[in-house]
Length: 447
RNA sequence: GUGAUUGUAGCUCAGCUGGUUAGAGCGCCGGAUUGUGGUUCCGGAGGUCGCGGGUUCGAACCCCGUCUUUCACCCCA
Image (cartoon, rainbow, N blue to C red; front, top):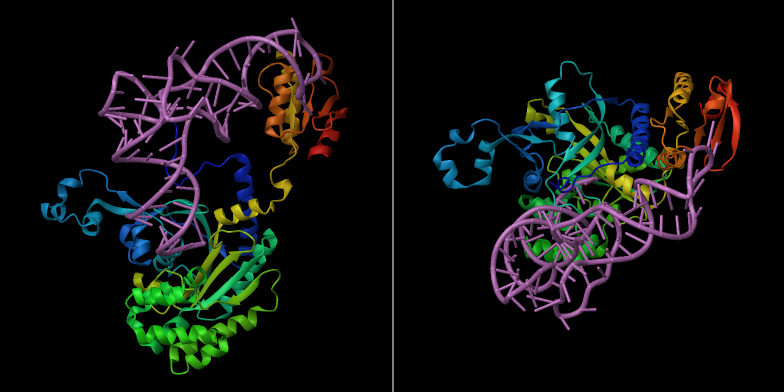
């Protein structure tokens, strides 16, 4: 059998894991500094916990887990004959891999509401799964690193999240643009245009502006069945330019639209000071397909790398009510670990010390010598030095090559002459220099 | 889900309009070299040509299916 792994999944080498941990360490520190506490939730949830939260497209991409046991005999002939994936799917699968961290978090909050102090700030770094077709920067298993606050309507939460994005990406050295919009502004536009019931088609079309241009967006709207008057009027708006001031006039008659503009201005004004390296921009074309967003929406683009967004998020005022907890608004952001990794790699931004750690390998010259060498190893490990003995008395050439390959720079030689000695020769493999050193000297060098 | 694209040794790739025994470089193993590697030289192992079917006297090459890779759309981190 030929070894292979499932489509859209990856193995990670030691060097890759170390770099991924570097990113997670930066994020963890940024989260904890601002009062977020860690939680974890299961890899899979009950199917009905996840379905219906992400929109039609999202539901399609949920990985479902086949029931175990003799489940087929319990399915009636009518369901088989109907061949409808939705009704049949629910009978065949009752569990699913999590699609994101936000919905399981909402479930968690409702389920543990009596143990939680609100407003509740949590962070979570775990893999999620999507049955998507893989592409560059798009996988079927990938990590999300989320920070969310639940139980406060305050816009200061949004301001804090903008600063959290900025701080984390600054620390990673990745220049970014944080794009902000508000669903209420989009809803206000739809209201004025008289197409409230076509809101989703409307936002999907707007979202494409930077890809297909103004005329492309208008064509898309027409294709989606939006009335020609609405398309024409929206075309006039586009032509005039969608600045904040222009929107104020356009949305004058929409209460919801006005509210969205006020929220947006508050966040933009209050997040400007304290920004380190990121740019914060209003972008009215930002829509986001996830259905549960109700107010502010975020998306983060990395500068100088052609890849999808490296982060996203927004406010969900009503997500917990699906699980039975009303009037509990939440807002959160997500960092896409795998895409951040690709960006840092492409721009050469990983610090070198991430992969190179000091260590020493003891050459093995034979049975008796190994006993003596192993005593050195034990002492060094006890002092916190990464040390190991080559297990076999192989040719020195082979032992040197092993150290090279593993990235170990120092090699100790405990041969017949050095057995029981107080100091032993230590060779630096990259310079070729060799020096006789005591235990203390080795600890000082590598500890 | 729609439309393209890719697959030959551990890795990167050659392989002509279908023609005998499928090649190279790197890597790997052994030797020159039994306590000091990286150079050099010599030798060696390693392939169901992604998988299944078809066309043909004959298929790595043509056709069909399938899986996989990469990409665009959709959507998204």
